[in-house]
Length: 541
Image 1 (cartoon, one colour):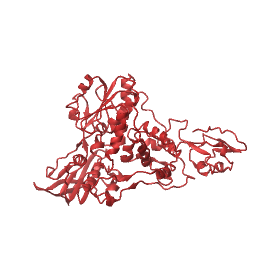
Image 2 (cartoon, rainbow, N blue to C red):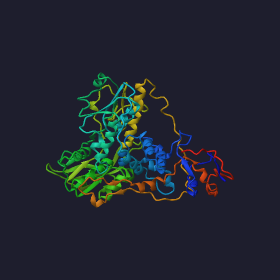
Image 3 (cartoon, helix red, strand yellow):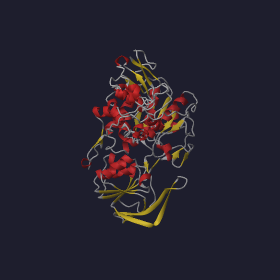
Image 4 (cartoon, rainbow, N blue to C red):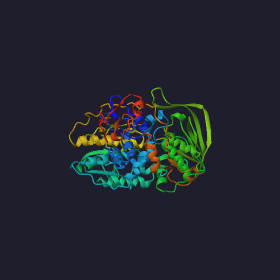
């Protein structure tokens, strides 16, 4: 006797049968026929990474295939494995059983193996050339996809080193430079031509690129400047600006902060500035922001790291003036913030002017946002509110054949969102160079599969990544998070519930007809036969 059939229309891929089968006969097919269906975790990933698929390959010990599946869509998995704040995990079905699968750590685990490989040059298919201005995450993602498609691609970067904001603004305790170097070297090895020290607007213009026979151009210049506000005392010595401070610290320039530092701002740059201040000698660091705690734009993981290291966070306060004399800063006068956004959701803070507070400080760092230098763009390219105006579907600018991506278009966002923007631009450039419709079929809705039922799923503890002890972080930029080893990865990958998968029979000859799978199936989708017969669902895999 053996399993006769699994009713594919009833199976929900909950995995109960896998857990109940003592002979390990069954598996889940993470690539069901309904290919247009995607999992909740994948729907939350701006880059569209197939978590269900690559985690399945990991459970099967097929690491190479897991790597291949990730690099189909994600050009910088080692980078995102270090710095992504994993929106995918917020939608993970496992949260309804115990805790979300540690998808981010598994991605990094696979990427660490990828970095051991050398890239093979991509096949050159086309002669029409693409130019990309900027080597940040959006530019790198576009270059990666276009060179894979077979185009000659040149990336121009104004700085001496590649990586854009990945290089200049993200501290090494989050993203070690050797990781970034390895990812960029891989893209170089694919055949992308990188040229550094070429300043857009000075050494390089859009008209000049067109004259040099570049048939499509992507502007991915990022937001490299600290946003500044006019406030009394902002010109005092020891008043610094977020991106400039982080950039100088990364360039190993002499960065001086005094004992008591106040950082103004509630985003990730503010948190990075606070943690960097501790590492370059500050004794006491406070973050002050307009937002309430639940409104802070900084990611929860970053905030926790800051509080773990002793950073004090004061919410619902805004800066009124920096107090001091011509020689030094003495502190910051704050005013109570009642609300950050108006009724329409627009940023429009309101204050209770009579409620003020003074905080002593001898260094003040403003980290209140970033801005793009639009002066380098030609006058005929449309801009609005410090952003480049593009078609929302194609990312084409007001100039034909010129596209834009990344934070210069979208405003502040995450690394993976910038990557997704670059990938979207690459699709448009491919269509443009091929003379195809730029919009056709790009706004189709994708079906999101239902989360697997939680009934019958065994609880398993989430494997957390290890962290460098707080006491060992002072005065150095050693990486805080430590990736998975093989044992932890194997434990964590088996927690994935493979939402939307279908059970299939992999080892029919091993079935001992114990009927456990049939009895335990919550959807009554499994039937056991008195004879060994082939199941209606083939033994995929």
